[in-house]
Image (cartoon, rainbow, N blue to C red; front, side):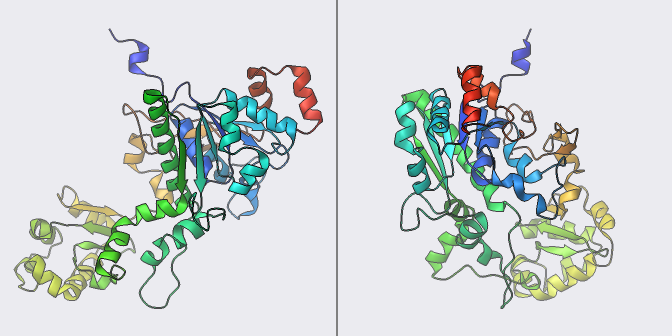
Length: 411
């Protein structure tokens, strides 16, 4: 007979404590992932201003007071917020006290700020020699720009080559990235590095400094292009959609203005069945399109034929015709449609939460699940919501807490 703990094991980071001194999305999203996996993440925020991301209610799509600020909720869910002014001695001592019982310290402060405030590796390790120290950077921990700040539109999207890779042919402007596009990938990488460092400490007793930069994550994501570019001596060629080398690894518009993606990398294997489902058996016997080499040589004509065919019927028609097709294909969905995606729903990828103002909303779960179970989710904390309880747990009495409030050290 299995016990309840066998059926519902504790999260993998149960018992691990993280102290996070970070703002915006990149590094806080690493804390959110670690919280998803069961860690107790204590978010340190300035008593007056808090994480500046809390102030983005004027972005045009974020509700005011009492509404849901998704810029805060997604990268801060599951944490406890403690308002501490680390720029004054009593506040810094509070941080040090919390660090003493922590497993990980995670920050995105620039080097000069870490040194000025007294929260660099040496100072934190002086209070806890075994702590894992994790840093998120724009451009890395070394080199002439190591002390330069960076958001993902700059360090990830622009500097890392991704914007150029997605820029259209010709002289048009490259596309701008979506909000926090590189931040979330970088944060997940940082969370994974923290877990690796914890495993190393568990096995060897040796602790680590973990570094992840937005530049490095962009280069990793664009690695096939970057590696190939040096080998061939130029950027990897781009193609217009009407000139793609493989006509069945391409995007097609349907009659009602939707889009389908075909990804038939073994093109000859799937070509006859695809043509049959499209009602175009003539394309199979047409010598211009009969084989992959022939389709490559006549790709513009082949793509034009496929475009005319797909544009002749609405999306629903093609979804029915392609149902059961062994080749890989899918529909381009928008962000709102993803909420009703049966695969997202079945796998718990969009957990539903209710915040302290009774707002109901969905967050995106972090992408790694353990034992086929969604990660536990709690809303993001209010600014300084847990200050008193965390300090009580750390050994402070009420007289000391009141004194710290009066001198501006805590919220």
